[in-house]
Length: 244
Image (cartoon, rainbow, N blue to C red; front, side):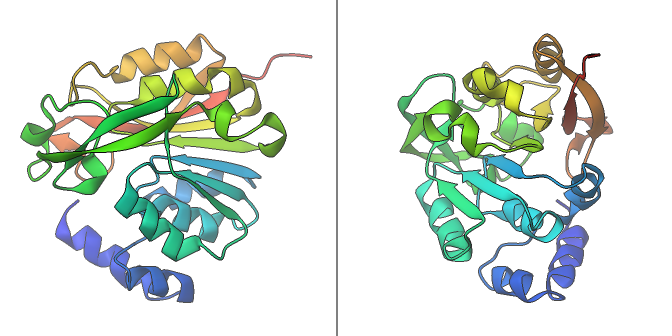
């Protein structure tokens, strides 16, 4: 993200006590998603998959204060930061795991910029996003959504947000038996193979369409383009409502 955008976000964070506190720990809310979050109307449950240090969860606490938020983050340092920020908040629950199609353990590839870490090995990630090269691995836990939450704990309307650096397909497969309880899906996906074997954006769109979700919007945020072309984008999907 360009430096001036980071500066604007940091300045905005100074205006609220909770965001000032988070800023002191190096966490800034992802204000670029604020308009979209407002447009969805009041949500009751938000599933923040790939929560990193809690920047999207922080925004949700501002825009959707009535929602119960379940933040899924497998990396230990990032999870510790979420715990420090939201440990006393009854509306935020931290799940120290990644979501996937099967449960177990796996090695996550740590990147020089932590939010580019992935359960998939890098392909062209460092080429398009300098400063994100792999620097190590960490063993983490993977679970299916239904192993972490029951359908009774997911009260609608529900937003499933996914930002998992190429692992989107596996997350969605692991959530498939719970998709009937989800109203909106907000998912980052790529147009080029940044991580080895990742599904590309058109494959995600087709997979979700086959399961009753239509593409409702696309946003190419700051830093998502390379040489004038979008490399990845954030995609909003809504559940297709059938006639009674």
